[in-house]
Length: 372
Length: 230
Image 1 (tube, chains in turn green, brown):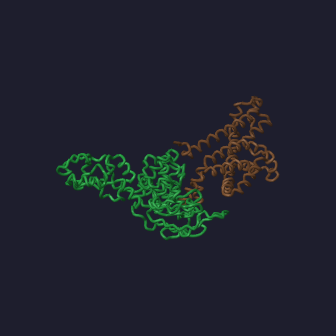
Image 2: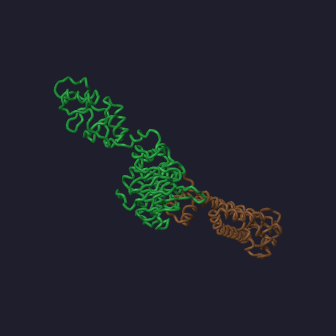
Image 3: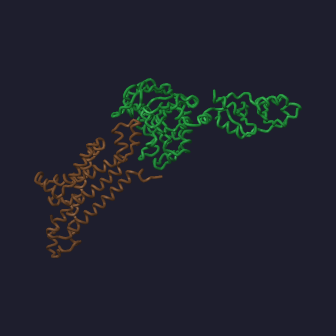
């Protein structure tokens, strides 16, 4: 399985319109959208915004009234619908596992239809079971014997069976409880790291969109595209009141979850080298309005020294320093950094990249980072 | 028919009044087995014929809602005709032939089978059909590999009812003199030879029970997935 995105898997919506028979209002207004290859694009919006209709036009379960959809530059209408669908993974909320077939048979549905030989199918099923985190022992069971979360994993494995470059997911985690949903979202991201598919995912859960989406397309009633951008883009600069209302309260908190420590300017802060004098340390503390100063020797963070420990003698490295209560990594979210700041006496989170000192995070830096 | 073989009369031990006279049973195995075989053949031909006719009707009914009403209405109308009346109508047309018996029997299975096949196909969850379509099943492949297997419990349930009903109705064939277990009953009443009546009645009941159990077993064997729940 390749980890590189298939360059031929970008999806292009070109003025796609859908008006259902008997309805005067279009379900999808002329929609132009480019889903880049290897990315997860989330379609989100209130019910009636045409997000599922948009998704189902990609594999032609619904045919557009006007406009065209292309995958890798090839119009989806160039081949028969059944052929097209065999090359596109499809995951739905109700999973739709065939209850009369075992897990192994369900996963092998498409390879069997495509006429793969037995050995190849068996190897592929084993590979998929490992990929989505199921156990070999489940292969001979029937879907009714599995939990909702397990069934959803099988659904994903089945959709990936023929290694399609494109995966369509219609509220894939809508039917499982919140704890399992969170885990499945995380698993989807880990899976995507390995398979790099072009994924279009429909949801009505803004938190899910922010968690899994590389880009989010916010649709309004009648299939009007209100904004299309990265989650951070949407949270930082909502295009209009509709998007702002849809994103909900606590936009800054949501961005804290999304943004990484490495996104911040990490140099500076109440930190001095070990050979600094107490006077220099005091100046840094005054400048940073802090009663603690961090001591660094080379690329090692030695610990914190309180203002009252400065006795005016020697260098600051000679004073015994208190180790930091907790560290954050460059990949940690700002939310984690905030948690560490709240629990630290110095109100500063120390960033460690492995053993190496990577700077510090302060409240001021987080605020500055969110404003950027 | 030689229900009262000369041997019995000659021995002077014929007992026509007894409801179960083993001597008669022992001396007439061929007659009993032939009646049983004829009965089974009538039933199998009627039920299989009914299935062959009702399957396409049911498929059409599930695809076209307007056809469904017409099909169920027609099958229901046939079902309400009393069986004796139907025989009476068909005898002048076809004479005393097997077709005179088979046609009404097939007709009576239609309503049961069409209704059950439609119910079975309707019972297949829309999400399964969507999943199948989304994976690129052709309509025929979806019907054969997803819808029909899942409708099987309902379809076999229909076959069970149709079979048991047909086994009961087939006794009517005797009125046209076309054999079956009914022949034992009719002739036994006419002669009289009460033991023949008993044998005919008991065997048709036993046949119905066996068919029902057998088809129930077949259903369980064909749908192992239906029994396994978490």
